[in-house]
Amino acid sequence: MSTATRFTFGTDFREGGRRAAGEAEVAAARAEGLAIGREEGRRDAEHQLNGLLAQLARSAERLVTQEAAHAAEVEARAAYVAIVAAKALAGAALDERPLAALENGLRECLAQARQAPHLVMRVNDAAVEAAEGLVKRLAQEMGFAGRLVVLGEPDIAPEDGRIEWADGGFVIEAERLKLLVDQAVATAFPSFRPPAQ
Image (cartoon, rainbow, N blue to C red; front, side):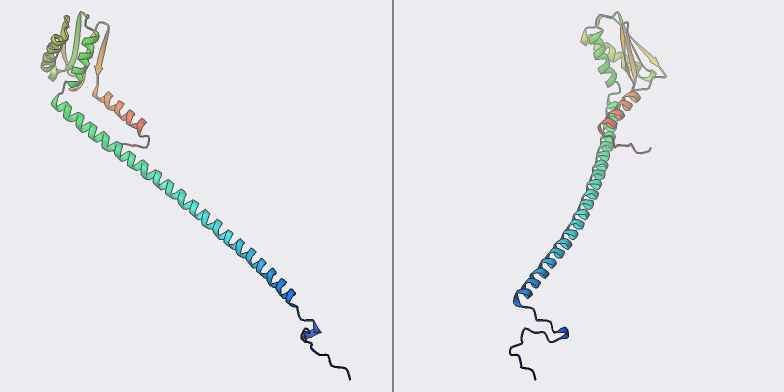
């Protein structure tokens, strides 16, 4: 018979009779498991954070694009309102003083052509009488001593006119001015497209 061994608490009696792990080995295994778990957790958290950051970047890009489109739309609407208001004011001013543009042009011409022997103003047939009164009044105001002639022409629009003298001239064309205004608006507001009429 064999002798009994006392205190065999460190022996594993399962298959193969392995020796039970000591406290140091258990602590080392626990520390290794914790380190592995922490590393996996850090990688998972980093992966989730990268995904959230990418999603946030895409959302921010969409918002910036939407805001730029909205700003362009607001700018285009503001330009349209400005043009409509300017045309309405210009129309009202033209109704009130149809020869205002010609008057301003004539003042400029008389200032430049003070010594000219004659000056010719061409207007629409319906505006001849009013233009003659305007020419006489401004010639007196500005001291123009030359000959003044007002000619009516059917092909000149009611708000248009031409002022000519020997060394130069001045043309007022409402359609040309509208085109210049539209070009200025297109330059100032590149995204503006006038609505179809």
